[in-house]
Image (cartoon, rainbow, N blue to C red; front, top):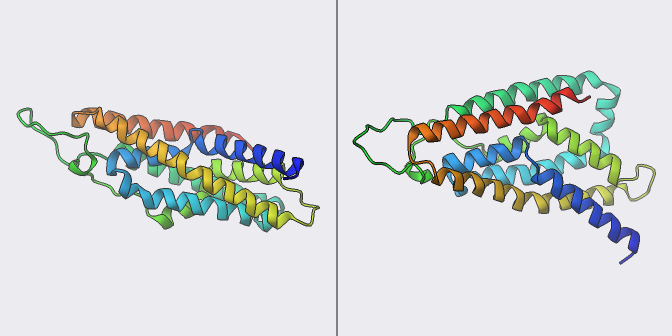
Length: 218
């Protein structure tokens, strides 16, 4: 393998792993989904992000990015739509959990997701995939990846973008699975409805906090 190509692959993989694994809306949301609904019901969400983000990356690299450069107001509008949607998701997370209260005399294990009735439902494949287009962090990662790891003047721009998208897809699966399992593991420690409610509110607060730096950036 060519030394330059190997160095590019290592660098791109490291970038993708760090961006996919760092706290952000997607990771916080799958952690909350895992805690509330379990792993199997969170799988459509995981697959939606895994496919949706690489497709978004290809679209941005092949032309969508130029549209937003020419008409930055479109990007600003989408950014604030995304912020509003994230706030709504934060509200859903904060208010999720047991739909009924337990009486002091009742013993119920709220740590098992399928024994914990919930007032909400997990994101579907399509919702998770489309969410990437209004996810502020996804836009920043996309634009950074395209600017850093592709050569717009080269003849192999499509190959570079496709390989980059595949790398992101491959590292996203274990990252989201880890965050989902983290949410499930945390939920197993929660033995009361009140504790679970506090946990959900904490995740909702984390989701809002992950949004603030993205809104502050230009």
